[in-house]
Length: 250
Image: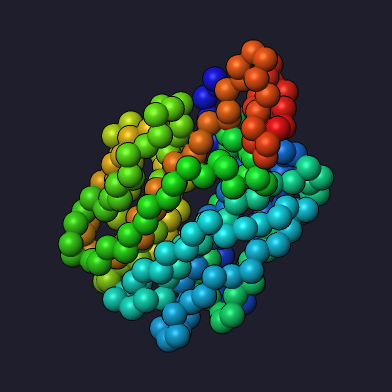
């Protein structure tokens, strides 16, 4: 069974008084899991931000989870994770549309090789855990997965959103033990997102920060490896397997 491999396809961030945000132009791969992480901070503090609509590149985008958290002591920051899959990708931008203007938005898009893409990619998500952590509580925001599946070929993706309570802009992100930091983008509006990846599963997904002055959104996603091929046994209906680099659907 091959390792799960992440690859960043697009990253873009912007600030200021708009109700939609687009990625940089990219071409998604056919028949691979794509995850989009959308970070938004609303201009106004009430009502809280809502899950944006996501569209583009011939991909069927489906929300996986959303986590509201504080930014400056008020619920106005939101992380939303979407999964996508397409057999007929197009080149262009993926856009998210918001109900109200945002102060700052960032969008990161990854593809993942060697994951189970059965049921339009839904089978790739083995489990998720998330938490909202208030400022001045800890410098090590974390979330703990349930007992992982027996197959230790699964991997874990960690997403940490942060918003500050005073003047600090960058909390000095250090990834958890055994993790690779895929993306950290502190923004000029004192907040951002840090995304980390671990090839082998562990239950604790954490980050180490230089300051506890930030509010956090801590998210963990267990990614299921592609179903292994057993000689003479086809993949289950709706499942998939990679055999000599080829995708076999059940």
